[in-house]
Image (cartoon, rainbow, N blue to C red; front, side, top):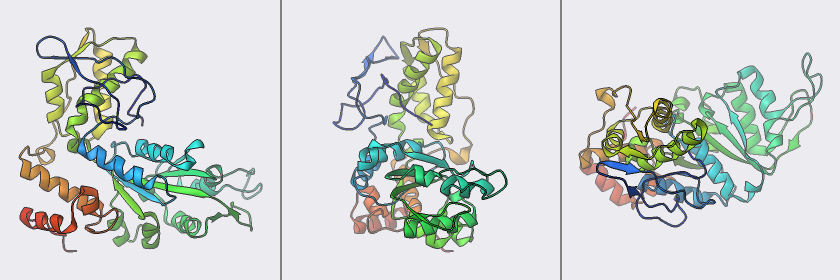
Length: 349
């Protein structure tokens, strides 16, 4: 899913070079927010300048020039594929197309052929075909929803990661491939390893450089920019021009928990655009999030929840590259002190 578009509109803090677009908000009348003029083309395609997004972009900038395997972690609807594309674009392999594979969408019986290809006659009516790994040679392969990969395919993928060679179905020979792996999942892979539904050795092969993509509730300040970017997209598609959004509407959007993340926000804007008959856009929120999912606005609660989420994404590893302290931009001892004050400790299994 794409969360950006050319000529996007946004309401943001002062521009920061290299992140997002250099757009300054304008105001129209009392209690309304007016669309900005389009920013110059060629700026970053990622919408948002929150601290959470800057942290992800910084991690991507560090790892992109390498060939290290990257594991993107985060809830559904957070835009992991967009960040994978951004990472690929910053790498030396970015001159070639990134090959995408949704591991949850392809039946297990077809996955081996999709990934590694097959020879003619490998099975009934089989014709020779290249797999996604061969198509991604000298480029990047994005394995989305890697946590849903079938156990038998996990074994074959592990061999590819270890030997950088693939075997087409029905062939006795192997083919070398030069492919950079970027995987993504909303699953708790550590828990799936414990449940023996995901191979431990494959997990460690994939978990070289984990990056946690934050949910929308941790980057609420990015909502105005995201909303205006969606408005611009749907204005073009639907032939409607939206001039303003009531400040009360935008405030309500920023108070919603957004369990469906950016995907849910985009759908809300699309529904509103379809129904819009005036230059001022009204965006009703269809359902209120359950109480269990509502976020406290107290700073200590927000901080505690954010640190817990980062710790869980890092499998409660505090130190080292990709550890919780590294992701949070804190010294490990500082994080440990803060955890003690907030009453955060790794759950006992």
